[in-house]
Each structure stands twice: as structure tokens, then as C-alpha cells.
Image (cartoon, rainbow, N blue to C red; front, side, top):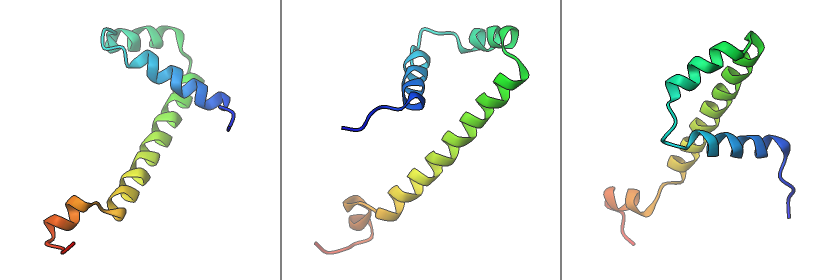
Length: 78
């Protein structure tokens, strides 16, 4: 069984915290602007870029594999 990395634990906590729909994201942004520094925001920006790149790759892999629904819409025989 693979050990969970520190980075994966942070990512899980991040998503758990921000998935709470009762949170006001604008207020969180306001408070972050008060307590965060330039380094913090650059690191957050890098996290966002990395996740966007990963999502693009995942979408490309998903569409390149196709699905039965795709085959049916193209008229493939099974």
C-alpha cells in the first residue's frame, strides 16, 4: 500500500476545506490579501497552473480512449 505524500495530504485538506459551500470565497480572498505575502500568492498561482495542466492532460487522455457512447454516435457496429 502506497504511503500518502505530504503534498497529497495538503491537496486533500485543501479540497475538503474549499468544498464547503457555506464558505464565502470572496471573504476568504479578502482575508488572504491581508495575511498573505507575495511568495504565498506566487505559490498559489503555481498550484493553480499545475492543476490546470493536469486537468488538460486528463481530458485529453479521456477523449483519446473514447467510450462506447462515442462509438455508438459514430455508428460503429458491436
